[in-house]
Length: 593
Ligand SMILES: [Zn+2]
Image (cartoon, rainbow, N blue to C red):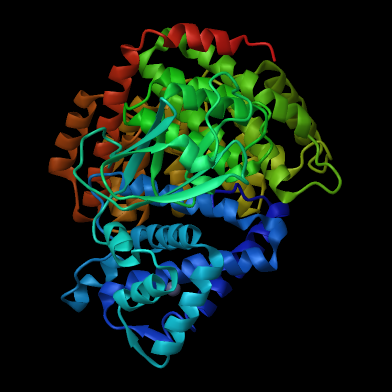
């Protein structure tokens, strides 16, 4: 879950957690207990199935939670990890008991659940359920292998399930499926996707699903070869109209049930932008189109210009999950822009303000009676983003409410959902010579007994553009006033803070190592401080420092963080060469809707 928890929505988040955990463990009654996997290599199937079933069950019991939207976070997390060179296949050879721990990771759970969902969606829910029932009956009170399940599904569906699924579970990674339209033909092409932009040689049997102009016109097929061209008329029963953009969008990977990325040519992308703008697509598809293009952009397969043009289509977006992802993409783009095109950063900020303003106005600052938990959480995230991008009206309103709160701790002007935004706004306006807002925040921190509130404040303190103040905040994090497990909350996320954070980390490394030793937290210090960099020189410097100061417990994290720095560095270089970006961002910054 990536929600920002407040007292009000905490109980909602706990309910979701309880429901999915109970669903997961109950699923093991069938997958694990009634039918037991023969060997650890098949563990992923137990865990993947239980994870998938936990969503299926929760969605049936509480449809109003829109839990499948939350599943998008799981599959995206899987896609991000599996796009790194450091990934591994779902099905791993296990020879010793000592290797078992290693396979209880995101790839087994998240990618595992995602490929099961992909298969179910491709075969159809009824077909899938029927075959599953016969498999359970046949193997009840005994052992089974992954292949026994595929055989049952193959028999029930007539589809080559064994071949299809092996390609997803026996090799690491996943493909990007490119689609373009020429002469009334759709051309599909698959190649391995790697976030670094490197070429991989993976090959998959891809269950392609597509919709054409409406969710009622749907087609499924297996992309087994590297490339395939299909006649549009055979696929959807009609020709594609050249000029009629309105009802002729084509969305591949319907509702994002497949574990792959999709890359569209510009004519198809333009139709999708139109469909997003006109709210014709499902929540999952709106989420997926953005996330795919963002991933492709980072891998330098798409331009930053095309990414921001797509982002511009989301101004009227209302769903929490989509907007939340849009906000994190905007933070990332701003950081890359700061390195690649510093002269344009103010235009980027103006564009994001323009983009989020509609939602901010819709939600307002005060809770509305009867609103959903998702809207309440969205309010906090949107206002925080506007504060981060320096939106004047947001900064002013935040200050006004913060002052009211300082005078009266029970003021109705300061509900928990907006506090993070207000604290970020306070720090955006604070610096070494104008420290009153910062001092007031520290005062609130010292007064409160609520750990939620303390964490919220710690998470805002380093959001200042003044590096000197960032350093002061970092030193505060290591003081006895901050519980050691909370210190990582204060690591800066702003481009202005990263150099000072790195110098600080080096200087305090021995102490941090001593305090956090081999625990999980030490990895957070490394990843949070190192990952924001975007140059090859910096990657070298970091590598050299840890060559003499490193420790086994950070080895894997350091590798992944350095891979991210190199991905950033290449991305920055390619944006520097992008001629169209200046005009595009200026147009978006001042676009009138
Ligand atoms: Zn489990």
